[in-house]
Length: 280
Image (tube, rainbow, N blue to C red; front, top):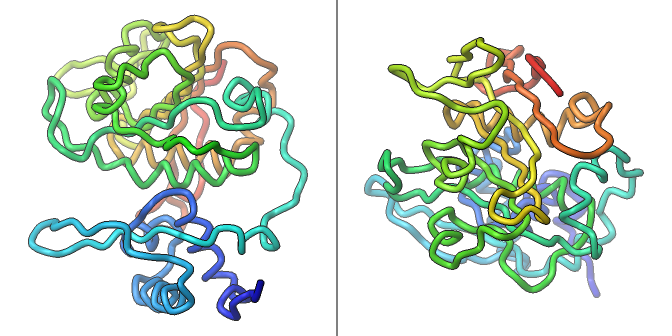
């Protein structure tokens, strides 16, 4: 099969890899890859010309039409995949999700529509794509859709599965349902905070990353990445995908709790480093 010339460009390959995991808009791609939107538009145009991506759907947002793109020829990515050795602690952390070599579970994000007791519209959906880069290194997926909205999980009664929850109890209703059973949990006192050993963390950039047994089925696991606000969740996903060697260096299995704070050292408004506040 002919390899399109555009795939000799690293930026084009990164965009195609991202779109092979989940449908995204140009803005979402720009934010996740830290590329200028015009640059993303250019490569989207080139990838479409080669029939490597297509428009999956269009949504009207604030008066504008947002186009969601998705990769349709992911087999061409095989020569470009990273073959570096996978970190052992990372494999252990996600081991229950890949016990058969295929991803066994669901990545659960909050619905973008107002829902739940707080009628919140979640803004975390595209962070699932960032996490998919790590999951893609650990194994393959079967023919099932692995990314679900929290409302879909409840409607389809999928709680008794291995779950990766993105977003806290305000935006993700599955996170809301397990929050009270966590050792480190979210609480409300005029505003939301994370409660830890009598201390209260109100900073919006704080995020709880934890792994526990699924209270709906003790034989399944839940990993939750939950910020006080969406910026904290973004920092948590960034921490688990970019700094997993730092936060998982002593992980050998079992329950895990890590409280981090995202740091913006270069001043561009997006986290580029983390501070570990607590880990156990």
